[in-house]
Length: 275
Ligand code: AMP
Image 1 (cartoon, rainbow, N blue to C red):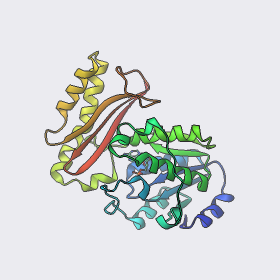
Image 2 (cartoon, protein in one colour):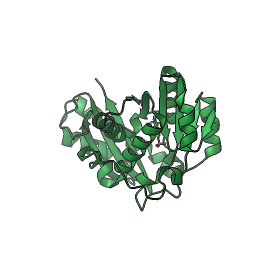
Image 3 (tube, helix red, strand yellow):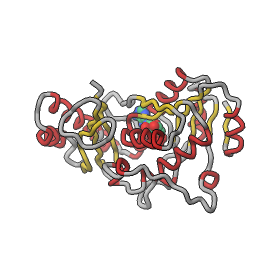
Image 4 (cartoon, protein in one colour):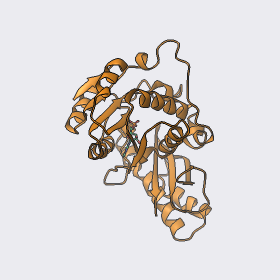
């Protein structure tokens, strides 16, 4: 496995890499969810590239950039074991040198839900992914369903700016109790960890209520009631699976989406309804 820290070295490695080339962007602190993306990329690609970059542009001023979990040695070990060919691990100075000014704004789709609660977040995500796509030049981009709005925003970016890359969205990997794997789960103490699966349970309740014919407001109320009483719900909703626009009924493709704070830790999750 090669590790490239500079953009020039990365370009050199990618130039004659066997195709198709599959790309898995990450912020490190890798878990089995990230590795599911790598596995899927490995199945479909002659060359697998993963990036590790904690992108400052997608963190708000009051967010956890400074404390975001980092473990580069362990991450590289895991990527090597998973059969990654090249790891691209630039630092922020290389990605955003002095004078950097261009950002990518994906429009209305990036202003609801996560975009409303985290202003500028998707501008940061779209900008770094545009840069990474131009550096890595992959044939396929592997994204997690876990960050559903991010995946839909990036699908918009790729379509609108004609990036010649196919996107595959890989299903969410969960703990046995339903909690979606997330690097931020590391912030939860034992008590909060015990409460956290109620976010997934709330989503399941909403889905089952809608599929059982209940109207949306009843389904959302039933879901909210399942969430741990000490958690702070930020949103619980149903959206169209292609546009992320709120939907009244559960017509596939759709997502049931939710976000809540457990203590100071903010968790998001969703169910992808495909049929
Ligand atoms: P991050 O390191 O949080 O930026 O995540 C990198 C990629 O891994 C994104 O495409 C995420 O959606 C994906 N991912 C994160 N958690 C999971 C999970 N539990 N299951 C599947 N994919 C995930």
